[in-house]
Length: 69
Image (cartoon, rainbow, N blue to C red; front, side, top):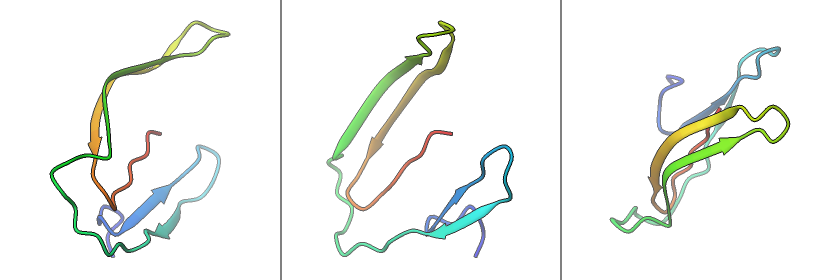
């Protein structure tokens, strides 16, 4: 299974080896209606005042997952 497969989630901290996890299956068919929609998200570190997320936009449908690394 390729690491880019939609059935696989991959996480790799900067100081660790690659770890791969199988995504849980779902019995619901995805619909056109998102369960979560974020538009132009920006996150700033309070201590350094550095913007660490800039302009992220996505919609999440039932049974799907997203991660920002």
